[in-house]
Length: 159
Image (cartoon, rainbow, N blue to C red; front, side, top):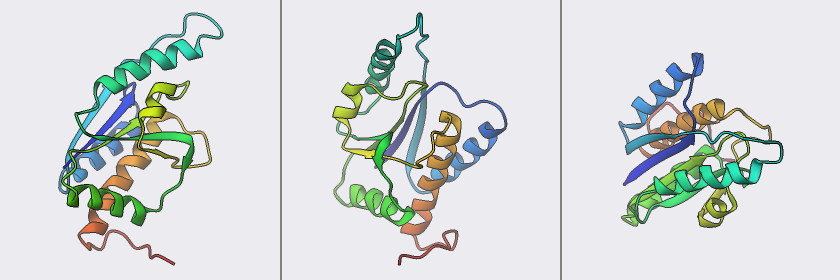
């Protein structure tokens, strides 16, 4: 099973090293790839719909055949670390091709991409820069792998 993380723009600055560290750790548990898609420039005020649509096309073009799309979206459902681990384990048991986690740009995700999503996931009620969202998501995917294998990294417990 494969996990893809598709994001608009590159991770820059001090967060980049932490993201790279977690992405390396994820590869201990899953076949993993990250793809960064070019940001679409806004040409005029009120251009958000066009930007979302263009970025959405680029993101959807990177989703592998048969993969479930998990859209990071502020209106999505919040999952626990245990729920994410269960989801990824279930994908493996079903022999699914995998999941593509998608992080939008400054204007969010296109309606087309949101319609294609199997799940809409919110990682926080806060609005986060895409670099921080990517850091949180990569850490949680890594944590999901440790939970699935019963490793001691995860100290949480279900209540």
